[in-house]
Image 1 (spheres, rainbow, N blue to C red):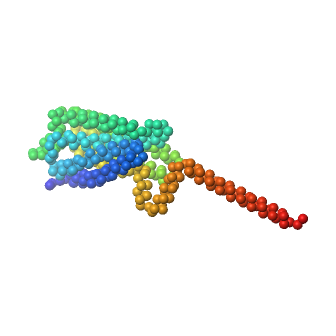
Image 2 (image 1 turned 120 degrees about the vertical axis):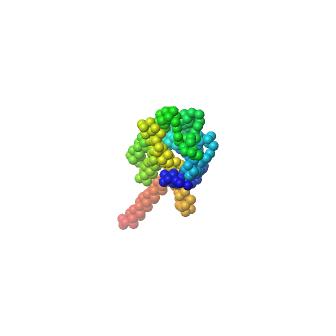
Length: 343
């Protein structure tokens, strides 16, 4: 097995992606499903579940990608080559669009909390998800059909073959402009929207009355989502732009796509940060029973403003009663002293 340094790096990344991405996405999926059953579905729940399905579809093909890297040949039947590429790029572009939808939702909830609450429905988020997946599937269908004759598996050398890597000049005439359009529509435009929403959220949160700890949490959540978007999806889409400028199929596309698979285990971290109830749930299990009871009492008092008002009212009444008692005692003492004075 004669593998280059790049092949060893690719094999390492694909292995880590499978080992970390599979349990992480399954965990996040069950967390959000449980949250939806208890509290009802929200836009973040809908987008998180869509992201989990997208990542799990890619994780399922990671062993195939690793085997292709080791064996340097496409071993599966030719029919599986377009199916594999469809799931690979659907996960790549679909996840990016879903992260953009999450960023837009966070910005609207902070900038226009009252107006956004009227449209903040799980049904609307489902329709948005369907629309985003339809856009991705349309682009990928055109890209796969561009290779005429469905000869997706092409010979590379003698007794070797590759899946969707070697193209004829006729195929590249269609693929290169289509790749540029995908890079602009499915990556650059969502990136600009996500960057705008993230920067506006940070500016609004900085001027808000939130405590410093909450501001740091929002800052970390916003920047981490934007970081995942740029690091995972930028290299491969830049190869589309370079390929269009040079009018060729650039050779380093295989290297650029490695970072795209890292979204499988990085996005669950972002999704856990989007669920504020998760840290409380885990800390409640680790803390002592008294701390948990104290936390529940505090939560009840915050969630029930009438109970809090009654408590404040009782405190005020007690203070007023104690002041009245002190005043009565002082009057009684003064009257007693006046009675003891000689006439």
